[in-house]
Length: 426
Image 1 (cartoon, rainbow, N blue to C red):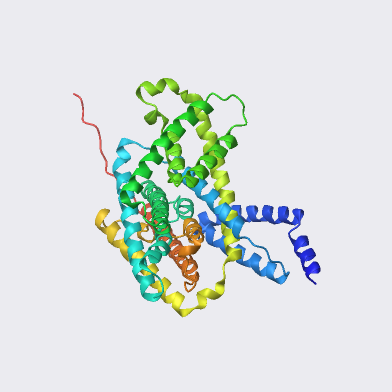
Image 2: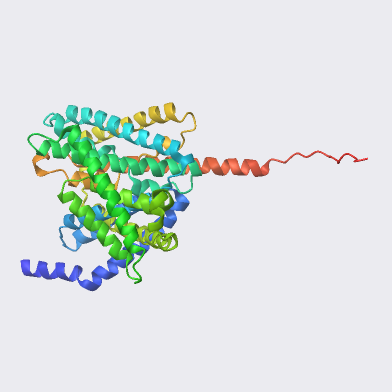
């Protein structure tokens, strides 16, 4: 019987079936992204639903497979590609200093405030959870998802779009650093403390700058056409080595992306003689394209596989629903207070653009076994991810309708005119 089952699994997951399934998923993902632009429904939600449907099919065929290692690998690569993609689009210009600093402050304050309230809620509803464990579980739930936000805000006004790109990128960076800072201190007996964390951050930035300058200078002089995936491989290698050395590896990716996207700023003064701007700009353009394509593919398979691995039964638990609703409510209350006090009245739809996604999932699965709690229901994460995505969808659809009404009203309003003649020069 087991031999027949193994043969059945082998047939379902045969090479050609996997190729067919992968191709169909990528094609569907493309149409989902087009549909998302028209309806403002995040393509991520469609991919998760697709994964759930695939799970039904796999269960019906009696196929079982451990997707978790693939999910974890795709999550790490997807995280790197998303941060690199965002960094390549960030232009560090003097006139944007204010908006960038404001987005950074809002991202940091929102992260810490949201994590603190979520930590209190988790401790109250999960009595077995210690304060340290609550911080570790609360941090992923407090991070904005740039993987969902960046593709979803393309239709917004330019300044609002930039704000969301900056904020979600900084939220990713700060959230990941905060998570691994907490984990590192809890796993070690003595902890590194804030001083050690600051030293680690400074060391990472120095290494990142040296590596980034070296990569740009070397790669602009490589004549072969096959070099962009070599560059990506080097970035992945630096990230992995940095993780092994307990550095804030994502800073390496961020610094490189910022440097190559703002070469004229970083290669000023005497450094300018080391830069061949035309060749380096060509590398930037091609890297930007490949990063966008790679991020699209990785994000597609990550959320589909996540949909396959989740259990919908946990969402039916009243306790899970109550905790999740309170956490979700706290997210928007904190966000409203921050945006209202810092930006003013024009905070729609920004206040509702706070989805949780890829990094939330990835960090949840990265919680060390020693800090995991058996009584914690992972359905809380799924509930918050789905709820925040749906709320953002509704807000974006409403904002689009509001903008369309304003355009129609403007077009239907007659433009007044007056007769006027130039005065005689006599």
